[in-house]
Length: 376
Image 1: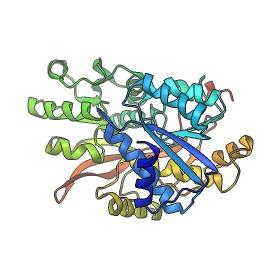
Image 2 (image 1 turned 90 degrees about the horizontal axis):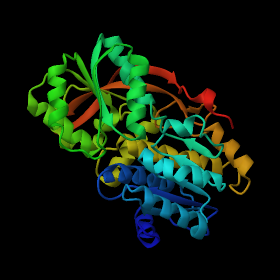
Image 3 (image 1 turned 180 degrees about the vertical axis):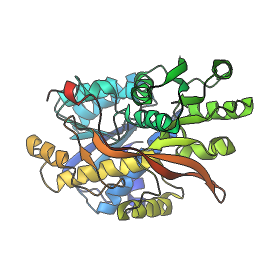
């Protein structure tokens, strides 16, 4: 989306951009596979900007097309030509690894509304990098903890072969502690899972854990349901989030998934966010929308305390995380990743709408295991 299109959208939201004190470069996925995720991050972010009433934030939005080389080109343009102060928006971890180290090395702040690869939480951490979503392992660690507590002891696990997929299976195994009936890395973007489902059927598994975001998860769940395999499924929110559930339909009902956010978290900020997002965009918000909303509000909270030109003061302001999160309690750990509660949710149907309800806490006040590797 170019600046002219952004300005039109901003006016529709009641935002006016004056001479900006903070220029934000948002590179996110707005077309092709995963577009729904980027659209939700963008819409949540822009809703928070609109609600703030500030006219000193300029947001330049570009579509990375889920291609690392495109993302790098856009980042170079934003840093060199647009001279942005802050960057955000990336959904997929392979794109994050291609863009974020270079951006922070050039003195830019990066606020991640989604991707949280382990490499950027550990040895590759940076004082200008803040993740406002989670470290990639987190929701999978919560799924493993749920499986363990539910009494499952022989899981079949699968995920795509890219950084977030590798972190997913690592995270699940870290807290699950049971036996594995099978472990598979699929292709990123894969849509046919007949071979994998056949292996699951023959494996003797008592549970299936999978991380397949976006359209990959839709394809897997529908094919799994059609196969007649009745082994219980567990997953992270990425395959059971609001934008996906309507496409999956009845195949998702009853599945337990893990998330740090849900529309039924009881706090005033979340209730107002859910209501205002639905009123503005005509749909229920997703996990990704909440992350975009929180990312913008983190930025705004830092702007209220410090000038972005004073990097040390602005960084300190970001570190305090002095904003009202849709999640309730929110803070950063020493490596600038969240410390937060992660819930177990069940897919239900409310009227004609498939959605999630919280059924319990999977992990409370949870950080990540890479903190000791981070030297800032």
